[in-house]
Image 1: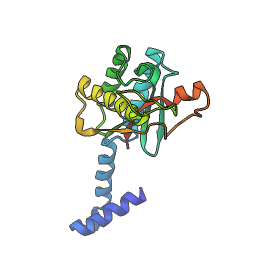
Image 2: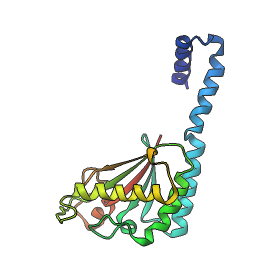
Image 3: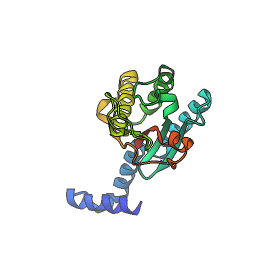
Length: 187
């Protein structure tokens, strides 16, 4: 709060706001921050996603993580894509539509990140894991935009290939965990 107070105070000096209005300006800034995805909103999203996970029994395939980047909804490959492909499974679309309705509530930017394991792929469609990870992120993001009309200017995609693993790639289970799409609700 001290940093925000100092910022408001400095901005008041620059734009000619009286120094006595420091408290009012700070309250206004705090309200603005709260409406842009503050703790209450993130907690509601967390609650809604947790209920969705329980409803569809996806506790082993969907998880939540909150860190300095924001709130990450981690979805493992097994419910989104056939192995080695980026085409969404029909069965995953209901869950993604419900996720999109939850995500749409926030004004925050959303980044969809595709990940693979370290087993090389080389097909005519996906000549590398980079191609596969980007296409998975793209197809997931595009579905979220099209299914519930999430504003496309809020969405970006990233393909990380095998370079951001969350488990060891030396076992089948570890590789399965690394094949995922992360939907990051940016702070």
